[in-house]
Length: 201
Image (cartoon, rainbow, N blue to C red; front, side, top):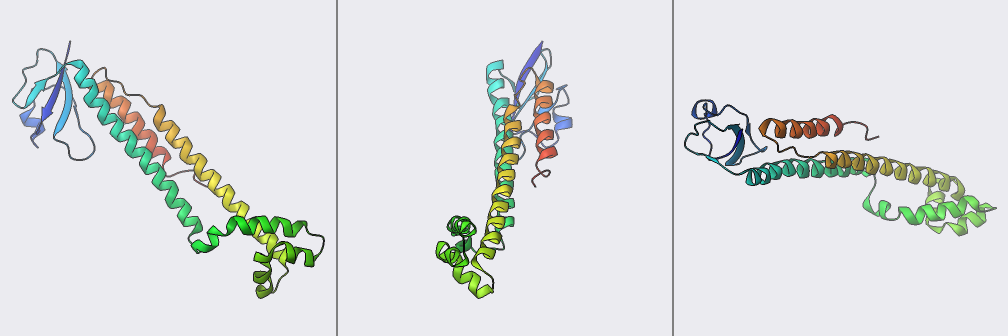
């Protein structure tokens, strides 16, 4: 039989103070004064260690599992945001906000039959093109290519973010005992670190 336990204000010298507990001790990443474990039901528990019922143990270790999950999901969203910001970092915010307008006018310009019609169809591009020394149509082609490149890159980032968070959410906690819990948690941790820094492009 398995005895489920909770440890409060655990001593830093776990190996000595809790040597009577023949099990792993579950710890959440970061400082926490409450930890969980399991051991044989005939184990003599030292001071500071209390036995708890399975339902309370499940609630405690599931909360630990969910903290990891939520942290990994938040880190994934932060990663996606940082990659997006890197892509658009060379452009001023005003250029980005005007992107949709310029793209719409660029589409109209390339469909125009003459350069004059293109100028009329894309006033937002006309001044820029004239200053640059190219036709409005030529600039429109560049605007369309750049805009669609951004859209494609954003789609990949969003898709990759969704793929990783879907994978994280697919993991389930195993509360059978300490060993089973750690194995289920380690599987999610391994998945996160194997995926967070690859295939974003």
